[in-house]
Length: 262
Ligand SMILES: C[S@@+](CC[C@H](N)C(=O)[O-])C[C@H]1O[C@@H](n2cnc3c(N)ncnc32)[C@H](O)[C@@H]1O
Image (cartoon, rainbow, N blue to C red; front, side, top):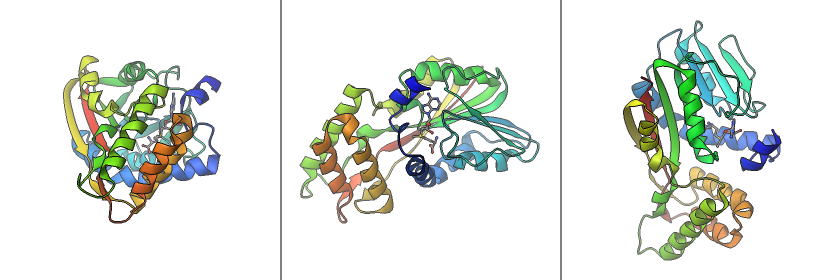
C-alpha cells in the first residue's frame, strides 16, 4: 500500500478530514451521476455492480437500492474506512485497483467516478474494469475535464489574472503528475480504443459564483493540493476568486461515458 500512498494525493490526509471531503464531493455530484446512470446504465433487480474507488460509499448505498435485496454491489477502494460497513447487499474489497483479486466477467455494471484521472496508468485500470464486466455489461466512468474552467465574463475585474493562474495550476498538475486535468476530454476515445462498443458521452458543467458552497469547496481543494503542485501563490489567487461573491466562472466539466463490453 505504501507505493499507492505516494501516488494518490489525499492518501496521507487525516481520516476524518478526508472522510468529510469525500462525503461533500459525493453530495455535490450525486444528482448528475445518478441521473446519468439511470438513463445510460439501467439496473434490474438482482444485478451485480462493482464500484471502483468508492470513496465515501455514497454511491454504493444508492446502487444497492437500485439492485434490491437480491443484488450484489462490490465497493473497491484502497481505503474503505470512510464508507458505511458492508451489508447483505454491499460487499467491500479494500485493495489497489491494479492488483485487486479479480472476479472476471462477473458484473453487469462496472462504475468509477473521479478515480482514473488520479491514476498513473488509467489504461491499465480501464483494462481491469473491462475484465470484471460480463460480456454485454456496461462500463461507466465519470471524470473531469478541468481545462474548460475560465472566467464567465472576460471583462470582469481580475478575470485575466484568474485565467492566468488557472493555467499555472493546471500546468503544475501535468508537470507533477498529481492528476491529469484534461483526462475527461480524452476518456471517450480511450474507452473506444479499449474495444468498448456503443460509447456514449454525457456531460455536466455550470457557471458558478464565487463564495457558493460548491465554489468554497473547490477553493479548499485547490489549497489542499497547492503544496504538492509547488504553486502556492497561483493556487491562493485562484482560491481567492473562487471565494469571492459576485465573481462568476465556468466550472470544471464532469464527463460521463458509458461503453458496452463486446
Ligand atoms: C477523488 S476520490 C473519488 C471518490 C468517489 N468515487 C466519488 O466520486 O465521490 C478517489 C477515490 O479513489 C481511491 N483510489 C485512488 N487510487 C486508487 C487505487 N490505485 N486503487 C484503489 N482505490 C484508489 C481513493 O482512495 C478515493 O477514495
